[in-house]
Structures are given as C-alpha cells and as structure tokens.
Image (cartoon, rainbow, N blue to C red; front, side, top):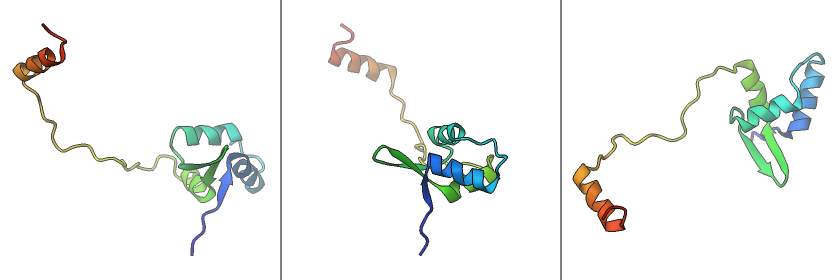
Length: 95
C-alpha cells in the first residue's frame, strides 16, 4: 500500500535543504507553486500539506503538459436576438 509523504511547506523546504544544501528554493517559492496550482495541496486545519513526491516530480519536469480537469461543453447554444429581447422584457430590463 502506497502512503504519500504529506509534508507542510516548511518541512518540505527543510527536506530539500537536506538533499541539496545549496538549493535556492525557499518556503516562499514552494508556497507560490501551491497558490498557483502547480502543486496540489490539502488544507488540514491551518496547515497546507503537499505531497513531497509530487513536489520532487514537479521540480524534475516543471514544463510538463497539464491535463485539464474540466471538459468544456461540446457545443454552445446561441440565443436569437428576438428571444433575448423578449426575455429582457419579461424580467423588466426593457420596456
């Protein structure tokens, strides 16, 4: 059974510092990656937890192709101008 290594942002920064003492990646940069949605996170109370292995995977390939989570609708229904005018009259926008 795989158990993810969930760490707080300061813990993740400390682990990176242990791996490479000359790293320029600080807590602020990791937090920015989380806030930008580049690394998935989970909020536990007041703490933000990230999967440390996902952080390392992102750092190995930061330009990986992102897959969209939501699929856009196949077709958009257009409303005719006459129908829109009657709708506006019905809700009181146009007299």
